[in-house]
Length: 236
Image (cartoon, rainbow, N blue to C red):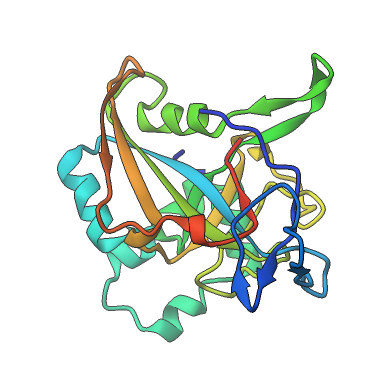
């Protein structure tokens, strides 16, 4: 995984409407609201917030990402690639290669690693141990405390069912029910986007020093906040 504080996950996971319009997110449906059905595999469509740590970047590069989006390595290296060629790279094997063998797949990957945090299988004070997204992103942004960098914050749409071949939605690779194949980097809390995360979905960036301290936070003036959407999941 290349790149990524902590907040609790909201317990209610349904999307509802009032008169055909999305209602504001809450812990339970409002009176008179109707619950929308989930997809046929049982996974609800939701908005997932993420962090992304990238070492060596500064304010200028961050503002460029606001304008151009967070592009995959493949898209950056081959900006003239056809849509057909790029879509052909969105396969299950390439997704797992990107996540579990980045040294081999990463340089030409059409996928983009993000972190939303996760919780481990062992208990901690009566709760599953959290692996915070911010801490993971900070580790990547500073190369473990050796470099300055940036931590991006934003959101993606997740279908809740495998859809590695569909651009525009991200894969919740953390979910072992959806992605049961072994992932040695599971604790990084990966959520994987495809081709590009649009600039409008990147809400802010924090520039961090090598000592892990934040230097400056820059809000993206072009960002669209997902507050108008229902079914939002915070990063852990």
